[in-house]
Length: 244
Image 1 (spheres, rainbow, N blue to C red):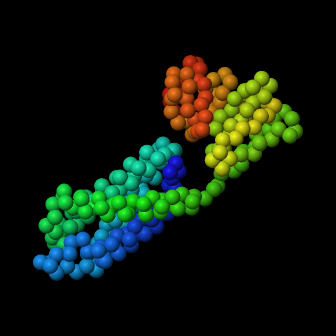
Image 2: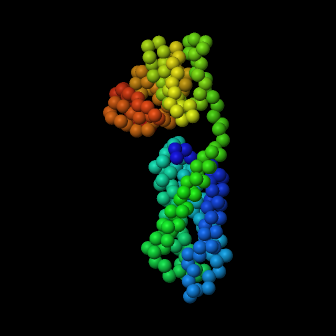
Image 3: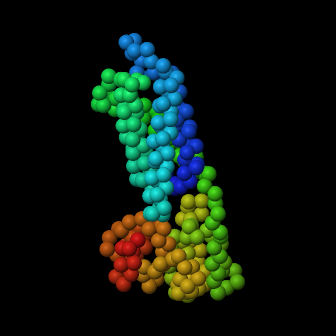
């Protein structure tokens, strides 16, 4: 998943869903069921649910902070987030299991093994819930209109979908995403004119502009990867790219 819904409110609903699932798991599966102890499974399961909600609420706040600072999200961040939640959840529930309400005799190693088995079932549910939350992001972005010298040279596109612009003699080729597919349009204009009218683009070569939000990584000293394409970098503008 390459997008994140930064809304803490939306993710709290995911936390409530996960909390309810954990409550049901605790009540029906009863992982600490021991004939030597007379457990009250309703309050114990409620505790499971509340603690899972609390752990996911922490994750929601932390990921919103990270996203605000970096202005990007990728699969690696998503994996780290889910692993962090599972680890935090394991530690918090282990402490809870040692409380007077449960007084479990399980060691942390064995408890972690139990939680790993639970996570195998919980993780796909969590992933699907997070994918659904992404779909709740309101699209408030306004269309950007790029005009060329000819009357028919008009491109209307969302700013976030613009990847790069390259000059080609008296024309510029604008690369953009349409339903996550790379497209391009050739219009009669100059790179200088595009640079002046589309302020979020940065120059990385005398013939290339890029949208910095689509920068991915370096291929070598003279080439970078942006979304679904490669762009040549000149020495003059290398520091600009290094600052991204």
